[in-house]
Length: 191
Length: 381
Image 1 (cartoon, rainbow over the protein chains, first blue to last red):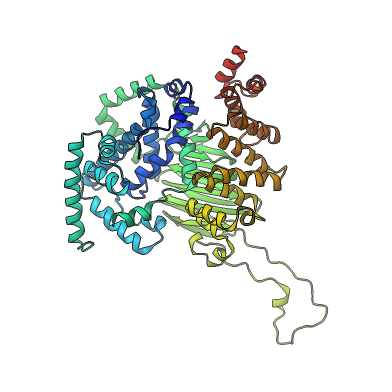
Image 2 (cartoon, rainbow over the protein chains, first blue to last red):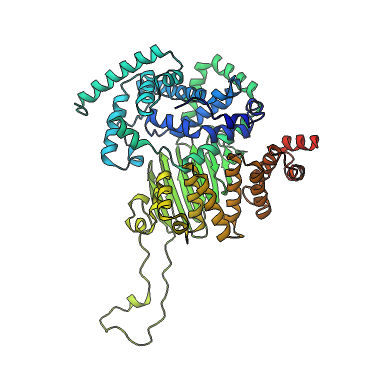
């Protein structure tokens, strides 16, 4: 999985940076059409078909549009979009922790959101168990684990998306794997 | 376990949701263009009065501001207290009332995506023909087809009340979908030429048609409908685009798409695009134009072909398709965008028709999104 944007798309987008700087609607359309799969997939996996999925995707794209013109090398835009998207999700998770603390969050503890998107009952239950276990992780640990094991990113790509060093990602991953394993074992979901 | 979950979630949000995401983002971009300094000022102010802001939000939740007439941003109505009503491509709607604690939006045809944020003190009424959807705080979308008097309401959050023209009230909650069609009126059958039934047979049975079956149904629980719908279409509807495309290819594209409606051809073209099979999308749209020549859907197919070719960097061809749309549907729902994108495509392609496209655009939309580009083109000539 490469971080680089297809060169063709960039070289043929003459004046793209100017359009991005002006936040021109055409640049917004280009951003959405180019990165919709990437952004949707990351948010979908990190939060598990969340009810606020569309809002978070929207936030991520707004953040991208706001600063994309500052990216020096537009060929590296894809990697940067990933980082912004992961940040948007981490912000949401942190906000939810506070809301939960004050009892202001309906957090779908039963995993009802999977009813509509996972038709297979067995798979649905597995998804519920995993995302319940992910709730025990910090936003950083969760991001690392999901990007690595659900999205199949290389370690360097996970580090880049989370904007930390490789060593830090390895630490987060080790902690996350151990916590999730313990949680799933305690629920009898894995041996 | 990870592989199971990856498989289960692989499809991601469906095409309709992605269309809405795009429309919402573009509406936001239109509203925010060139206002970076304003956001900075707002950000600084918000930081300085953070605690006051929290209090303000709390107060807003308790007593939302009286509703005012919304502003139109692109294809979205944005209200003073933050609620948004998006008109999906081709939809026609207007705001009949927005004052005090009540807003009334009339959907003439097509689909709306709605996000109401003003809490439970305001009442929102969405009228579709003789039907009405009443909501407070919620997110939902509604589709109204006046010709067939069919109403479709899908709720993402909260709960809505649907008052249908048959006098029924139904509640639709988060994750549910209501598909309603006006029941068939009872009609009188011609009298039998000679008594064909025994005297014990009740006469009423030959004089009136039985009442229509219960019109409300959750889409996923309609076994009869599923049996009638081609398998590829069920997969496409469920967002499994690659599977839908594979099935059509296995059957043979011509055979699978022969005899299907223009709506289904548009659906397949969408599935093909999202499955990264532009060749099949192109074939479906061309087939639609051939079979439904002169129709509104054929014009829409031209517009979609334009987008498809534009994305494939076939700029001159893209401009040609947008041009076809403008000529076939000069007052159509995509006319503004088609004229702008025709100009954009031909300008990038250095096509000699760009001058005419620029003049025509400026004549019709002197303040349109592509007006600066049109002026730049005319200045360069």
